[in-house]
Amino acid sequence: MRELPDFDLHIFDLDDTLINTREAYFSAQEKAVREVFPSLIGNSLLSSLQELRWLCQIFGSGHTESYFSAFVASRPDLQVMGRPLATLLTTGYQAAFLSNLKPLAGAMGYLHNLTNRSKKLALVSNGITASQVKKLHLTEFDTFFPPKHCFISEAYLPAQKKPSPHMVELACKSAGIDAGRSIFYGNSAEDILAGNLAGVATVLIGEDSGTEDKRPEIALPDFRFESWID
Image (cartoon, rainbow, N blue to C red; front, top):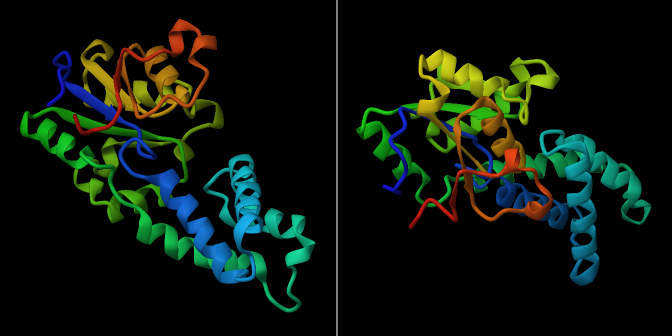
């Protein structure tokens, strides 16, 4: 177990904190594009995937058919008469994404260690409830996070999603544990800011993808883990 102060409540983000979401959806996007457009190879394939990833970021990864529709609309050179391309891409993507989804190395063991020490666990995640619940089930993290301990942004007002501290505060209140005895693990600036604003300790998981030198102190983590494995 990593050396941290002894917290009673451990709160976790889901995507790219406990599971390999970004890796899984990039891999699934590529598989779908290769299947629907087998003639795309080399630099043409790479540039198409870069465009698709940009559209995914703009629309949001949960709005799959929307960003695939935009991708198809932006590429008239790829049109094939009589084929519902966005639907084909979406169907291929969804099957590949679910099969590629898995826990990050060491994450399952970390949670087992906490439960063996009788620590309370909670999940705080931005996203669509049905989608996040399915991810939890497929990766078997639902054994650690039953519904009453899951706080997913679709159930709240848009202004209450991270980086708002609202869901982190709810997790503490539901567990009956003060913020000072709680810690939140996440992989993004939004996670760290939400935790810090809620008054809990924060841990940044993985590489920092932001411009830390421009961040205010309120957005900096208390601890950092490069991964779940020492």
